[in-house]
Length: 118
Image 1 (cartoon, helix red, strand yellow):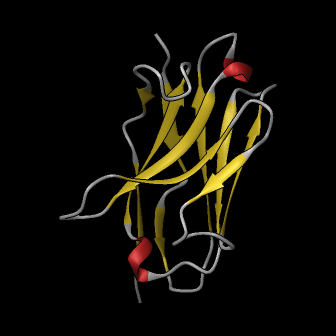
Image 2 (spheres, helix red, strand yellow; image 1 turned 90 degrees about the horizontal axis):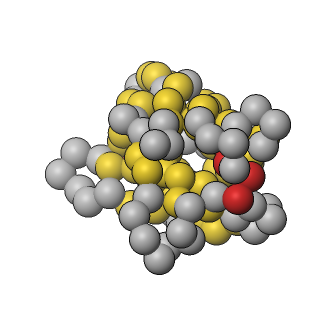
Image 3 (spheres, one colour; image 1 turned 30 degrees about the horizontal axis):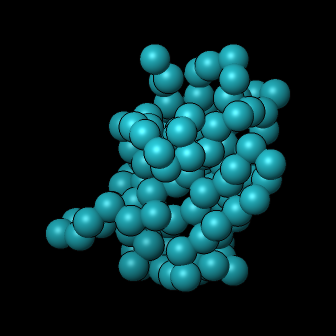
């Protein structure tokens, strides 16, 4: 099975930056749709950003212009660069790997906590 391990979360002040990493297993990582999702206390899990194998990206309106998703296929790693962080960005961030591009089940990491607070 696909295994995903997130890292890079932590406590940061409003306006600060964090870089999340997701290390994935699998020899065909380059073919998967990769994404980041988040879940804040009392809220449903929501999409943050996705990237196809060809490099096409999609962002939630709430993070557009502040967050950047990227992937390094040689390292089997996906990144989420988060700038200009706001308190409302506070959530557990989850890495997702989707071999079926929305047409079947996908794989999830265990999450990394991001807290934006003064």
